[in-house]
Amino acid sequence: MGLVAASLLSMWVVYDHPLDMPEHYVARMHEVLANGESVATSNVIVGGTLDAVRSALPPGLACIPRYPADDPNIVEVWL
Image (cartoon, rainbow, N blue to C red; front, side, top):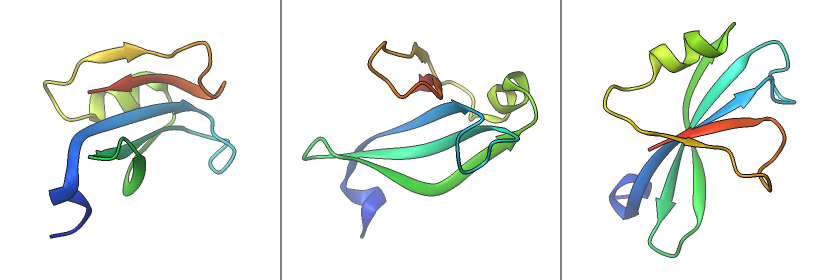
């Protein structure tokens, strides 16, 4: 059935003004596959502020702070 059926976990990665949308905060939905690979989907939330993006995320998610090794534009991940 495709990517969604094969995924083990969906997550939203929140970015602070990424290179492809430098005027916005952006959340991109990723699917984690059975092999551990993370694949970005076409689901994107765009906002002028971090709070605007956070408020548009689906309810019931938990926030994971960024890791020091993450890309500098990553703010956090929501699972």
